[in-house]
Length: 142
Image 1 (cartoon, rainbow, N blue to C red):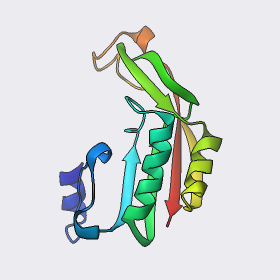
Image 2: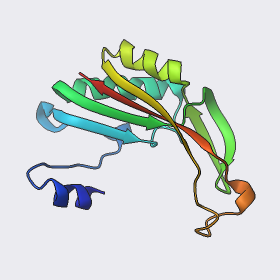
Image 3: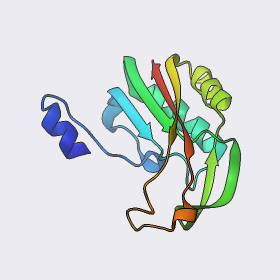
């Protein structure tokens, strides 16, 4: 995705980071940050809230944050996802929006959608291991 973004917007720079151990170099700030479904596995609800607040501090004034998640209120849920066991935590839509507002983001838009993974067709798991998921996309500005 970084290579595709760089090809499509060559005047911009893109970075892939692990939020769990990231600190911007020398107070560097960003024009936009995206988090797509990566704050679900092996995190707690409190960590999710904390990362949202950290991201606010990493953005330039007016910077954009796009956050995508599976909006289920739960802490360290042991589930099977596409045939594999994982431990997941997430926030409900209201909890996500409250976390955004607590970090003082201006929420521009919150959008729900449904997604059906095609994992069985891809040979990743069995058909019974796949179900339609709710997805939440939040667009916010610092």
